[in-house]
Amino acid sequence: VIEKPCRVASLAYALGAPLDAASSSPLLDDEEALKATGDASVLQALRTLFRDDLEELIREMDTLANDPAVLVERMHRLRSACGFCGATRLAVQAKALQNHLAETRWASPAALRRFRQELESTLAALA
Image (cartoon, rainbow, N blue to C red):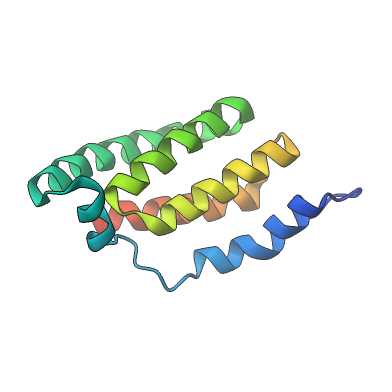
């Protein structure tokens, strides 16, 4: 849904977000994660912490959706963690949600749904 008057950033998000979710990138990019961490055992430890963080995030999503400013900050922190853990697709969706929230000041159900789907897929890949 695009409300009028529409900003260019909102239109770009609405058109681009579904394409990002269907990206051909892997859920977890081991090569990029190893470059970021430098060591397989460090990567495994970080991914364990990352999985715990994602499980907490999924439990908090409904509450966070009611506070866009806090959710924007949470997406910022999540994107950093995604980089170290090679969660490229989740990082793309976190960035899209962060931009959406910054632009509209509220979390649309469609934006939350797209993010939650990628979050759940990433959790499944980490299991």
